[in-house]
Length: 196
Image 1 (cartoon, rainbow, N blue to C red):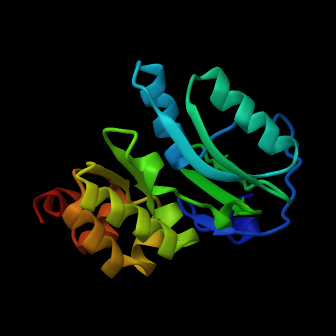
Image 2: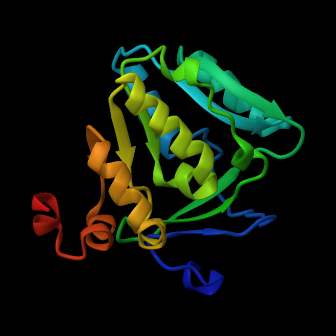
């Protein structure tokens, strides 16, 4: 199924307007950065979420889930569709995804929201979606002395934005990368990538 959609296993691809009606599919609020925030909140940390949702049912359900997890809601709501991602997990447990950004690419990050917390986490997905606003937020966090946590996000994004990511990683306090991302980032095997 993954190959039939022209997807590269383990990577994400934008297909606006794609509609998946797979049997047994579950609708779950999430996203790379959001999942980190939800996990930290579950462990008892005070967390906030900054993002943009559409004025649709998915957006309303997302905000309801954020509230239920006691995550502070810094969400902007814009007219239109919320971003949606379809995740396919192959038998070897590799995750491949299709995404439709909807209005979420037009997100706003207010500096005062960053200053409320002891760490700022973002990912390569935000960087690829809106580089200018993500870089502004990272620069604000750095200049304000707020530690930075950064997830490279996806091997293809790393390949496309390697030089920008090198600048971010050099100032980040925590960096997340899987095997393929670290290979693309450092140009060597994961063990040597850790040392570089």
